[in-house]
Amino acid sequence: MNLIKRAQAPTPKFFKVLRNIGLVLAAVGGTILAAPVALPIVITTIGGYLTVAGGVVSAVSQLTTSTEKADATK
Image 1: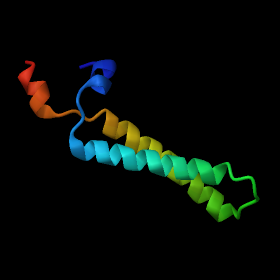
Image 2: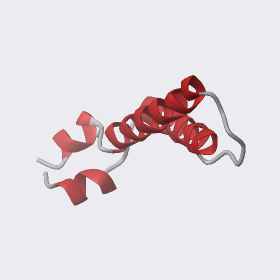
Image 3: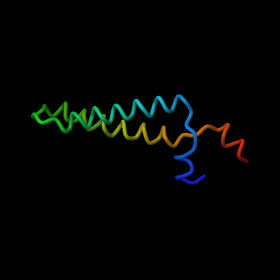
Image 4: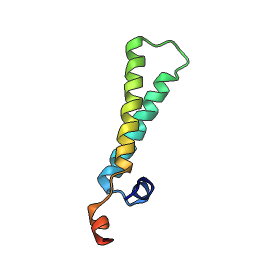
């Protein structure tokens, strides 16, 4: 299955929830990084990690497909 078809395939409920959590993490991290005030280095570093972790979790969750659906199409 190529990447585009895989991204458009149905995602299991657990991974939808996990994807949304990843999007929230990325948004919180981005907000911390874009804060208009000077924040301590530790907080800025945590914001960067949150952004990366949220993006990875969201991407992996989006590309996870249900095996029942894949088996039915064969």
